[in-house]
Amino acid sequence: MTEKDSRTEYNINCRRDFDQDDEINLLELWQVIWKRRKFIAYFAGIVVVLTAVVSLFMTNIYESSAVITPVETKSGAGGGMAAALAAMGGGLGGMIGLPESASSTEIVLLLNSNILREKIIKEYNLLPVLFSKQWDEEKKTWKKGTGFSLNPLVWVSKLIAAVKPADKKAVKKEPGVPDMWDGLRALKNLVQIKSNVKEKSITISAQFDDPEIAARLAGYFVAALNDHMSKEARRVAAINKKYLEEQLPLNSDPLIKQKIYTMIAQQVETAMMAEVKENFSFKVIDPPMVPDKKIKPKRAQMVVLSFVVALFLGVFIVFFLEYLEKNKILKVDRPKAEG
Image (tube, rainbow, N blue to C red; front, side, top):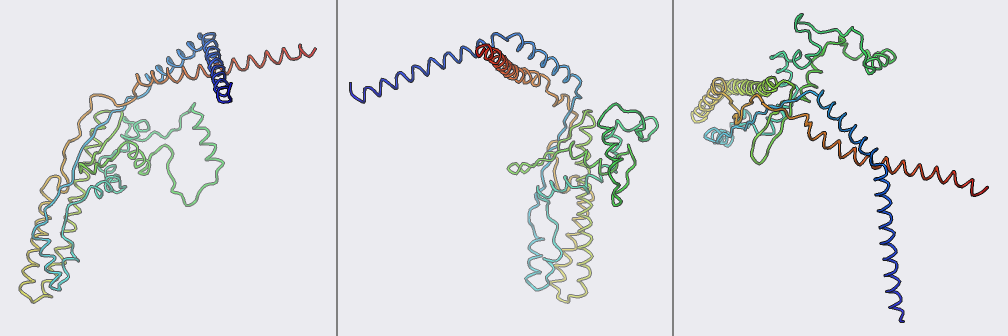
């Protein structure tokens, strides 16, 4: 027999031994699982039942969305006039800045800004809505939270507050009464802004346990955005108009004066459009509607996922118990063998 044949026979024998060991190991694993099958079944069943019970007590959350898109204004004569003025040495085109449509990025930043959200909270009085559990609807006042609480986290927080030295620079807050910062944090969790660059659209999604309030929140953001951008356009147009009127006595060239008059007319037109036109800087593609179905919790998915996780966890516990049992037997048999 050559050396090559002997190596081949050795490799074949090694593979055969490995396959036999593998089959024995798999058989042993299956025997362990079958031996404790009742434990795995009980464990998985208890976890599934507990998951189903917990999911039934979870609050249904509804989502309402509004889709908007920025209004694209065509560059008309205004830009040419501003360029002509700048070329003629007036320098007015670069100083006044003619009104332009807002980009998607600007609208998204504005929707996420505290300025707009604070305005929404104040205008629509959202603090009692966002913190309804702390609001007494009958007395129209906040619950001070002086009652006894069984929640251990409440006692821990009180203990930390009593031990921790007071911060003199911090703003004093009345216990149990949410303030504007609490409202802003709540809106951050409830309202999400998403921008689609390809479709040039912005989605305002509001989630709440009441479907009507979810639709109202999305509508509040659309209305507040329109109102804010319209007022800002009128404010900028008024500043530009005042500046242009101040430039009229300083220029004696009839051509420049004519162009200034034209630009003043454009500012007046912008202010009028912002005053009367709905959705001045953006267009509502899909207004918010009251949802008829919840988005979470997904109870069926939770039950199926808990079953799969419990099954794997039960098998792991079974192998661990088998490991402990074997070690215990070995420790008991070892002293006997030594004796």
